[in-house]
Length: 328
Image 1 (cartoon, rainbow, N blue to C red):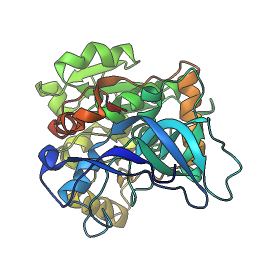
Image 2: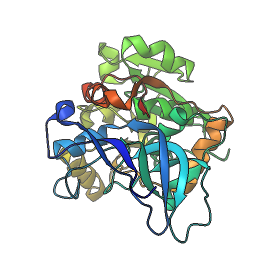
Image 3: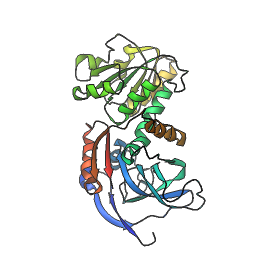
Image 4: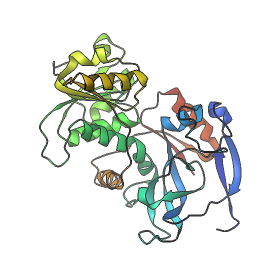
């Protein structure tokens, strides 16, 4: 690949949203030790991608400009770095790229072998690209809330807010696999979809019942996977069982403060800010579930790389049902 170039999309500074994305032609990167070079087939945009662009994680991310965003990709290995024995050119894989490097919105990307797993032929590139951040976050949230996936768990009640979003749709399906009773909130247009994925009760978040988060059958929640924003502890608290946990996947400062206070006061009801930590075994487990037909990636929309800014704008709007995929 020496001397070869590729199409990519990058931005040159903080802010600017979709309008700041630039289409460029740049050299194809080379894999270093313990890395592989992928020909990217599909990439998935997550809210964290445009939050990084907004500057929410400055001064840490991006480490430098210009920056090619997006970390969730699926594709085919075309080259391997030194020391790589677990993969070879021609292997179909999905990867979580390093946050500091990004690189997903491009025809080729370098991925760490530690976050790359094989993709079986039954799983399409678009389905696989949806998994790394969103499905891992859903899985780790449920586990943090006490869910067991080996059949040993107790029947428990879980609430999933914003259940028609990228994380929420995976969380509903995974909660059912863990034999939980699922109450979910979403917009009216997605109620049937969320039910079809296994939710036992679905609330329209714009109704008084939805806003209060009360279970239609009067159940108290042992765990809440909180994927929405703007809901205070005072709304959750009366709906929780005595040892109920709220797992907050997008914690703001007040949530982190609240979490600390709950710990200091030895409250049985806890607010848990969750930052999903990518694990290769989680990715393997998730892709296997997709292969077996037990988990599906709900795709909101697909865009070619030439229209990546439209996909970016759609993600920023915040009303996607499922995953937004860019195909190369």
